[in-house]
Image (tube, rainbow, N blue to C red; front, side, top):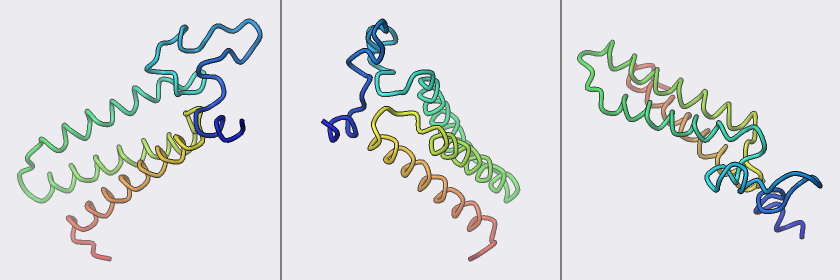
Length: 122
């Protein structure tokens, strides 16, 4: 049905073409929710988490290091949000909306934190 395709995607468990192998059999369950050719965005998700974890563990000394850390974290989150919103990598529309919304809100929160820590005020 149309609702099931919107919620779960249309090509994850069944071949899209006549001769195409099952996506899950070809690439594995981890990439099953991604459109063809966009599974690397899962690696981007993991990379951003590792990058932001590094910045969370970094204890800056002084305002300049603090502002640099916050700006780099905000930039990483903004690049991730832009990639997710631009490519819509998931098969299911609900997954694209959730992933894009979460990434955008997280980037906006880090931007507000960066501006607040820098004393810009708004």
